[in-house]
Every structure is written in C-alpha cells, then in structure tokens.
Amino acid sequence: MEGEMTMIVDAHTHMEAIIHGVSLDPRRRKMTRLLMWNFELMGFNNPLWRGEPPEWARIVIAMEGQLRISMSSKDNLLRFMDRNGIDRTVVHPIAPFAAPGDNLKLCAGEPRLIPFTCAHPSQDRWEEGVKEAMEGGCKGLKIHPILQRLAPEDPFYFDLLEVFAPYGRPVMAHAGEFDYYIVKDGYSAYGDTLRYEKLIAAFPQVPFILGHMGLYFPDKGLDLARRYENVYLETSFQPLRKVREAVGVAGRERVMFGSDWPESDSKYALRIARKAAGEDADLRDRITGANILALVS
Ligand SMILES: [Zn+2]
Image 1 (cartoon, protein in one colour):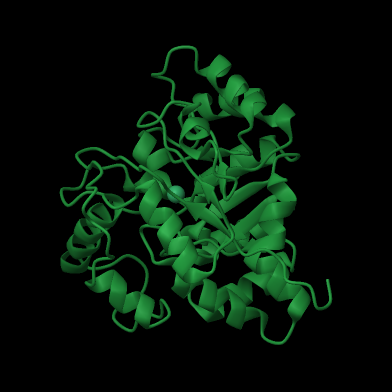
Image 2 (tube, protein in one colour; image 1 turned 180 degrees about the horizontal axis):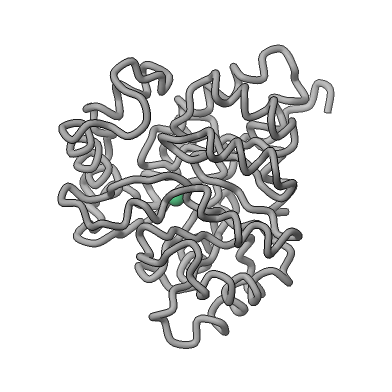
C-alpha cells in the first residue's frame, strides 16, 4: 500500500433516516450547533460528566439528534462526503421505518453509497425481503434494539441471523444506552452493549460491528472485543484515547472509522481516526477505510 491512496470509508451513516415523529426536512442543510457541536469541537472529550448525561443535557442532545436526523437526505449526505473527503459510506436503514429492500433503491446508481438491509418482525415476509435485499446487492445488516423496540435477546434477532448469516456479511449493531426522544420512551436499556453477548456467541462466523463502541460506556464494547474475535469496533462519538485503546484491545484489523452521520459531522470522527493511527500509515489506511471495505467488498 506504500504511496498509494486508499479509500476513505465512513462505516456508519444514515440516509432518509426516519424515527417516530421525525421526518425529512428538505430545507435543513446545516448541522445544529448546540451541545453535540461542542463535543465535536472538543474531540468528544467531555469534561462535564462521565457515562450518561444529566437530564438537562440529555434533553438538548435528544432534540439536537432529531433536528440532525431531519437533514439526512441523499443530497446532504453526498455533499458532506464531498466536503469531508469521504469516498464511500455505508448506509444503514432501520426497520420498521424502512423495509429490507428500501436502501437498495435509495443507493441505486450511486456507487459511493454501500447499502445495508434491515428487518422487523412486524414486516410481512421479512425473511424473503432480507434474502432479496442481500441477493440484490446489500452488503450487510443493521440492527437497532432501541429504535426497533426489541430486546437484544429477543428470539427475532436469532431468527434474523439464521437467515442472514449464510451471506457471510457483517452486522452493524447499535451499541449504547441512548434516549432518542425528548420524552423518554423507556427503551434506552436495550442499547446495553453487553446484552449482545448471546447473539455474538451464537454466530461466531458473523462479524458484529459495535456502532459507537458502546457510546457512553465504551468499556463494554472493549470488553466484548477482547473476548470475541468476531467483534469489531466503530469509533463514532469516541475520543482519541478510546480509539487508541480500541486498537490496543481489538488490534489493527477490527477498528473502523464511522460517524453516524447526520448525528455527527463526519469530519470530526475522521480527524480522530487519523490521529489515532499517528505515523503508522498501514494502521491509518485500515481504520479509515480498509477494515470496513474488507467486510463489505
Ligand atoms: Zn446507526
């Protein structure tokens, strides 16, 4: 790879992301500049609290998250990729807000976007939907217990993995307790990273990418990566020292840059990923693109 430019790939983005009560606002083109912006400017080092935020901050973060989700149009995604020097992004749909094949249609004709699939037990014929999506070109599966309102231990996820595992592709699993709504809906605890352990252990041949590494509790992601070879860590919202620690624990092949765009502006997570690699060009290429590409191409 010496002297060769490798592709910059964002392992975690959302397009036309829709959650309860939030739809696309085609006129929103700019990131909010509230608390999340301050975290971004501070490199996600938070001097104010440890773990989950106090209630006042949780409310601001939830509100900001909803406003950012409303700007997740294809146009905005491609514009931010151009601006931040990102060559490819993996696009994650969330069922039941999206059907298994929706992302194929959304990403069609745009080779810079890599589609994943999704499924929810409320969807008719979801098994066929997942098979058709994978055979049609999806490169992985997104699961999100909080937004899907399904416990990580729910038998549905085991059924889904039975259908999905034969394709030999990765799962992007949201990892980390989080309240998406200003009024709490009570599902935050489904984000507890350690609750994925049974699923990860049951499908050792499936790569599980832990989105955000556990978010407010990255040590949970590190713990699973230490104990399971099929666990990968995606770096969104993590500060430099945690990304370095992730490389120390999981090794250079199982850590990858992701932003969770539009929840964060990808330039900040990319900057941290590059810094974490320091002068090690091979490590930098791996974290900023090669590791995710190895799973999806
Ligand atoms: Zn996500």
